[in-house]
Length: 353
Image (cartoon, rainbow, N blue to C red; front, side, top):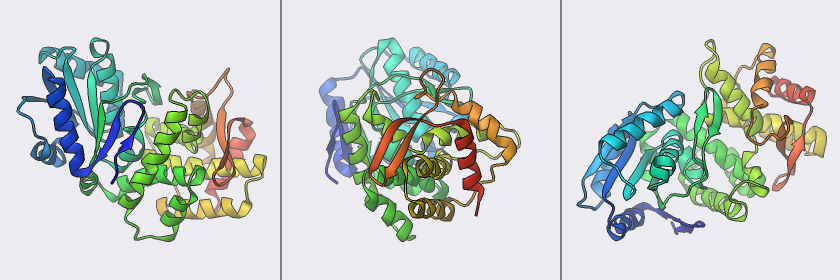
């Protein structure tokens, strides 16, 4: 796979990525190297990483608990304390080895420690490969509110090694697939068509194109002032659903992709009602999402709480909920205002078989 050049860093693939990482470490003469892992990646990914990394510098491991519920400021404090106790300074390097929680949280930790140290992202899940690790967003959740605390900060490079996908569950692969579907609907419909038409598709084949799309959008609008908002397609309702299931004692937590898939169905419905998005394509989306992810039970009693959580979405201005909507595949409109009753109708539509 050809390397992809971002604004201030490069995304390298497979064996070349490890060579470039070794060059980075050698050329910058870092005082110390820290690797942030969780319970899963220390066992399943760290051995491969150490086998392929060529450096004679000592490496310190910092391990956190796995899971979205640990993506918070308390975990950051634990990592900052560990780095301090281990003698980290402004010439230290932090390598994040893990999924979206690790790359988001690790990037935030690095970009704020001593006002900022270098970091490298090594995403190990499909979701982090095609979305979380790319684009310079770092941050943590505030309670159940997604990514409320964070900064824009770019890594020195990204090591993209698809072999790590052999360590994750099919459910996690489906979670990351939702972000590829998002890119397909908004920028390259071929991606969505390949996913819905080929149940045996090797999803690795779509990773490079997905990263290309995200990188192109971020290069045009790095701070999400305008067109980068399109990357939130499906996320406005999706984040509300994800947060609600996360805080509910009587609900099983959803993966990020499962929630975003629900959001894409709902927001396609709103697009159809407000921008004339094709009813046939709307049905196509719902059928594909239900086939890939199953249908999650969202009770009408849940609607008002989901709506309340959506009011905290980062894209909102002046208390109004802002949406990205589709006029057609590959034809979107940002900053759309949607009344609450239409959001409720979209959740009802998702529930219909």
